[in-house]
Image (cartoon, rainbow, N blue to C red; front, side, top):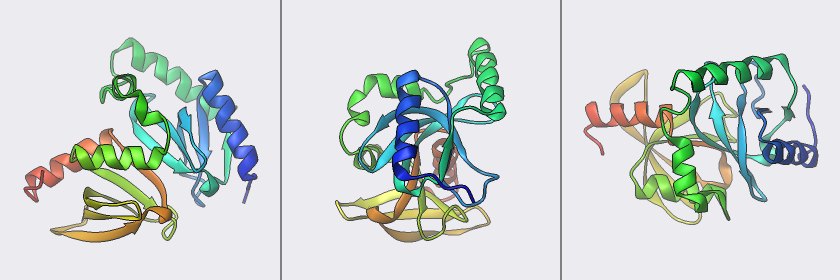
Length: 202
């Protein structure tokens, strides 16, 4: 399995940020799934990306722990294809239906300082669902839910299982164990709908 050094990955993320170009971030062992997006911020531990889906539209923000990244790719046929699709998404007005860019423009402090803390606090204070991936499961499973408690060490997540909606489950997550965090996008909106309609949360 391909594995680049943390420093090499940071250099590539920094270049993508400076040049405003798409980048592939391979942070899971299964190479069939990886993240594509625009890097908007880096801190000593995390990178923050505007995530772009296969249709070339924004599907939210994702923070990825840099030392969990296996490798990055800045020049590939897949990126070229997605880049072309973003042009169509712009032309037809569906590139940013979740208003992620407006959120960043209106809240520039979200990209400064401790990125993980900023995103967790934003979602907690605004009662917005998040998707959390931990180092324990390495992409085999992640958790969609609402943060009910948050401190400097850990958080408590009330999450649901799409295959078992009999109840909400509770998961205490150490911040140090979070490999990636998805916020303010498609999964936030669908999670919000499920929590409201089925569990009468929010």
